[in-house]
Amino acid sequence: MDNVKRIRYWIAVLLIIGGLVEFFVFSRPALGYALCNLLLLVAFFCLWDKDLKPRVVDYLLIVAISALALPYALFNNTMLRLLNAVALLFCWSILITRRVAGPVISWDRLIFLIEAAFGWLIRPFAALIAPWRELFRIRRETKLSEPPAPRKSGRAPVVFQVVIAACIALPTLAVLTFLLMQSDPVFARYVRDLFQWIHLPNIGATVWHLIVMIILLPFVASFVWTVRARRRYFISEGVQEPDATPAERHRFIPGLTAAIVLISINLVYLAYAAVQFIYLFSGFSGTLPDGLTYAGYARRGFAELVVVAVINIVIVLVATRLTRRQGATGVVVRVCNFVLIALAGVQLASAVMRMSLYTQAYGLSQMRLFVFVFLGLVAVLFLILLARELSTRVPLFKLGVLATLAALIALNYMVPDACIARYNITHYLAGDLQVKELDLDYLWGGLSVDSSLVVLDHADAIAALGPKYADRIATLKGDLLKNPAGSTGRAWGYLDQSLITTGYGDSERADYVWSLPYKTLDKTSWRNYNYDLWRLKAICEK
Image (cartoon, rainbow, N blue to C red; front, side, top):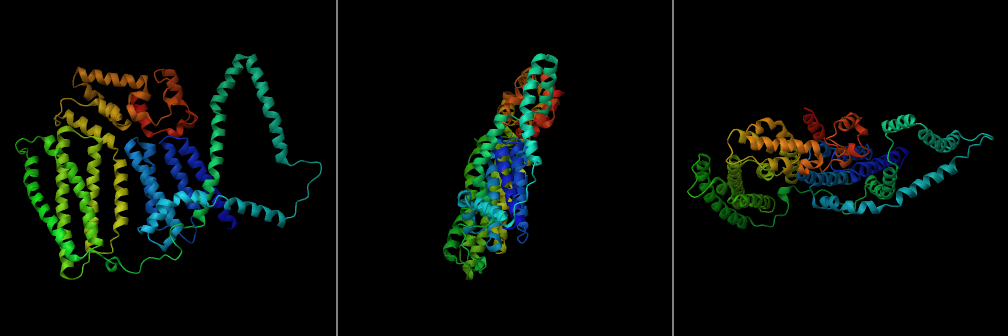
């Protein structure tokens, strides 16, 4: 390893250590998590060789990581944060494994996915000694190759003089300043204001952070070393991409068997589709079958339809990849796949219309909105399967992964909780919802700050509905000013409690806190901040 690579290696180690400790271990899911992923991306580029430049897939994964990390600093949806964490782990695993494996093997191969899934468990322990052994070896070789410089007599090095002066001056200044503060209260107040303005770090917290960094250092160095050395633990050195195209791979399901199974499934789906074309359109025209309400019609069989849609994906995938296509039976299997995809589209439309009926009658919820996005993703997956039937060159797994990541990113930037609150409030005010009253408790305490902000935006319109709503809005606003940490339920879980409990009801103290510079609000709170805090603050100041 030459000097440039060695420097880049240790820069990557320090960036990863700083990102993990400062912005991940000691932060809550907010701005710190986004900064952690940013530092990891910088470290990743430090490890990339000039002769092995990132490809299009790598850039797409980097864009996905950035897009999934940014919502931590913008929004506060607990479910999406969990999904984003899983997606980020997957993207990082694929990106790092591609750095290790190179162009030798495609990332949709099973052995590649095994390396990506289990390499994380081996790399932190596989090279615990190697980085330090090389460091000491280079240091020893440098000492042997360079003769010691002659030392000037009678004069100590400048650095040594500065260190000695600091060791003498700092304790002396501390004692003298303390005594002067005790002798004059005015001087003491100025000194305290000066220290508060400088905002010295908490010594105990700083020491604890350094201890955690030192503990993690050998494991991170081992992980980065194995990535830098491109060590592979499940992918053998001689593995290569198969020469055969997907159409020429071994398919073990006979065509006649697959044709019989697909035809029988399609017959049942045809009968189901005929019923859907009768009752779906009658449902939207307001003439549901006797004995059925909107809730009953929408809920009945909806979960089963979602399960059937997933099963259909598996059936089409198996028929596409594992079924023999020689002769007339191959043509029949292909036609049956086309018919099955079309009928699965009818079932998806049925599920979407059922949920639309229920939503139009009773409003949106987080689960209903997520289901809509999931059904859209399933429709895209069916289109990918259809494209695969038309061309064997279509990469099913890769396009499926990219479509799933795109759906998750779109769901994040839709700001689901704000969409839910806006839909329910506007449709209730218009008289479209078939509910007795607007569920403010769900919109305020059951969802995140994004929903609470929408409620505050429509506070006047909601209060105009009657005394009951006016009293409820006044109560919510009062609770927000008195106790912002608990007034919005889960919404403030990510904030540093020491900041939001500084006395929001005390106007002077609150104004002082808000007037401080960004990083001096609290010793750790800035990394736990979220854009919603400033939006809510602006509304509270009106």
